[in-house]
Structures are given as structure tokens and as C-alpha cells.
Amino acid sequence: MSDPRLENATPADAERLIAFLFEHARNPWNYLPEEPLREHFAGLAEGKVEALMAWVDGELAGFVSFQMSRYFARYQPAESRDRPHGYISEAAVHPGYAGKGLGSQLLGAAVRRLEGRGVDAVFIDRHEENAASAGMMRKAGFVEVDTYADPDRRPEGSGRTIVCVYRLA
Image 1 (tube, rainbow, N blue to C red):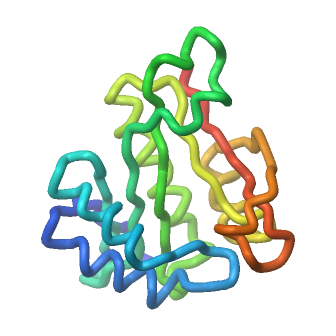
Image 2 (cartoon, rainbow, N blue to C red):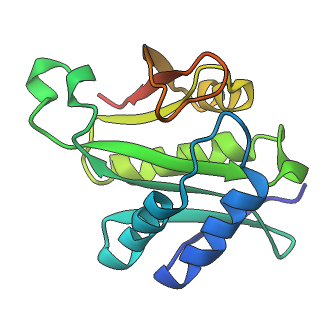
């Protein structure tokens, strides 16, 4: 695999990213409801969401989307709970590039971008049984902080979500 070229996604890329998720990331472990995904990627136009796309030899090989959040404040130290943190919402890699470090590279790029926004932590979550995502997150430096029952988002397998964090401070 040649080195990927990372490029900022624009609002015009939203449909491409949604289609990429449906084509390459649909599995029993990923929660991909269409309407919330459309709302999420509409955030590209509003400046609330950012995404980085990885291109290899002219092909979209993967992407990561991320934003500022307060949703995971309960996992922050008391002195940081009032400040926003980063949240990586979606990360997907084309199966032809899986296992080659592209996913962890994308996560790392998102962490660096969020660090530039002044956050001291970046959160991400996944299905408890999603081994591929677990490896990608671990390789990028994320550590698990909680596991909880989440049957609405995780109807398959254990039905549990794992929250992971990358601490910057």
C-alpha cells in the first residue's frame, strides 16, 4: 500500500462518506442508522463536524469523522468536566486496506486535530465484540474506560458498548 494522502472532507463529501459506511462498514457490531448519520454529516456544512479522508492510488481507502463534545464528561477528571472534549464518531476502512494500519493512522490524525482545538481527552466507543475496531483503537493509543449495556444501539451479540479514551493531558 502506498502512503495514504489525507484530505479534509467538505459538505459535498457527505453522501460519499455515508455510502462508504453502508458499503464497507455495515456489520452486526456497527450502529449505522441512516437518519442520525445524515444529521451527523450535515454537521460538516455547519462546522460542527470534521472528517479526514484517506486516499490511496486515487481510491477512498477510509475516513474518520470527529467533533467537539460534552457527552463523555462523566469520564473526565472533575477539573475537566466543564470543558469540551473530542469525540470520534465514525471511523471506517475499506476491507482491502484493513489490517495495514490505516485505521489507527486516521484515528491518530483526528486526535492531533482535536488536540489543536485544546481538548485534553478524545473519546470513541464501539461494540464490545468488535475485535477489528478494538485493535485499531488500541493501536492508536486509546484505552478502555467503561463497558455498559446498550441494547438500543447494540442489538447483536453481548449488546454492550465499550467507551475508550485517549488522554492528552
